[in-house]
Length: 284
Image (cartoon, rainbow, N blue to C red):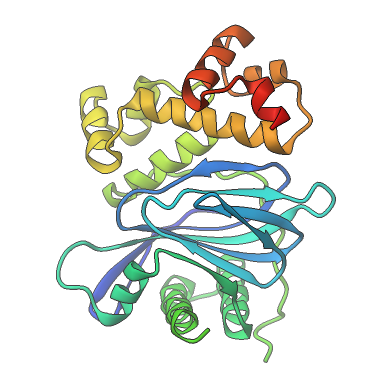
């Protein structure tokens, strides 16, 4: 599904939405976290699995909504027999100006999981219908629907009919990231470390976001408080941990998958990072 850039105001606070996705997950999504002011909304439409939020596992099934805010570590594991299909929304709450009451509620609820409710389901279907069919005025209508979705989420925070043809489009299996505008650079970085951690280089990352290597290092330090090498190592180790716990792959295969040239290098790096060898970690 094509990535576009939407903006709208929640009361008087500007919200940027650089990514709306609808994806089918057959493999675990390694543990990751997003930068400041960045939020991710996940709504499960089909399948089963689990999500690990701040080291605690929760079941996922149709109708579950969870939202992760800045620096909230999370990973998602689909069921082997009933893999997950999910509507995803990545959005940034503007730093400029004072926060509106609605936006402030989002900032305070940087981790939330619960039943989405019928209104959220209806709005998700409407948003996907508009993006898929692109009828006249869809560019203007989607931000209105997104604002409604945000309001319903806030109502879920504080409170514990059929639209169109009610059909969901076919979910994509891969995410392609288009470089959009400057405010979306952090989203691009997040997705690159999530999907290309095995072999990404600093030069490639800098080229992807249109900055020099020095500027890229500064950007990482400013927004993540980490160097490029530290972020790459963390992404690799998170993927390795997820695969060790949730797959039957041999340790050699995991080493190759996450970008290590030898199992010795991988084992040494894993033990230094987690304090135990990959084999010991798998045995529990």
